[in-house]
Image (cartoon, rainbow, N blue to C red; front, side):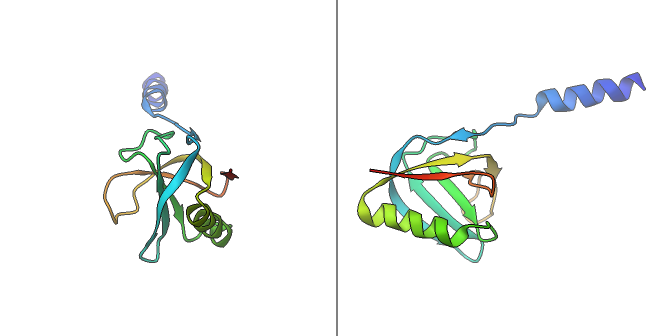
Length: 112
């Protein structure tokens, strides 16, 4: 029983649960990823400590996918800035590596 407790403590203490806000940045480009979602590139930093910085991925099954894509394109076309909350890293397999992900529990702000 004690060994199970120690193993559980070790597993959870070595797991990183990173999340946070990106820096506020203009959008460099928006890329649609083959039926999986879209990514937003800019000087966003790396709030979830993923292998790839400055990119945020939004999955196609996100409950507000259309609104987030519209807001991202509006920011890009209007030269405005976005600030995005990333909950975790995700590997969606297209470009390789892990990317900050805006989940259904996250937020996106449009700034002047």
